Image (tube, rainbow, N blue to C red):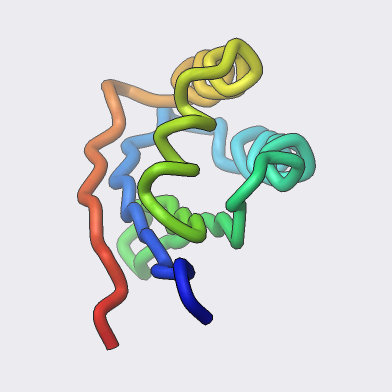
Length: 98
């Protein structure tokens, strides 16, 4: 599809002790809100066997992702998510090339 270049962000997060279930619920609820943004493709919570977590975020392109990031709605969602974390999330940005 012309103009469709999937933009992926893998965000490493370190959760506070004992909040994993609450965080999972927040991910599900916030995904419903984020799915309303133009360009949203998918967002999932990943976990390793050792208990480390990451978020996998997919948007149609970087421009739509950045536009979503500039909204008050996203700021509110992000602020709530950060309340479950030990420190700031660590994003790595990717462009799907194949």
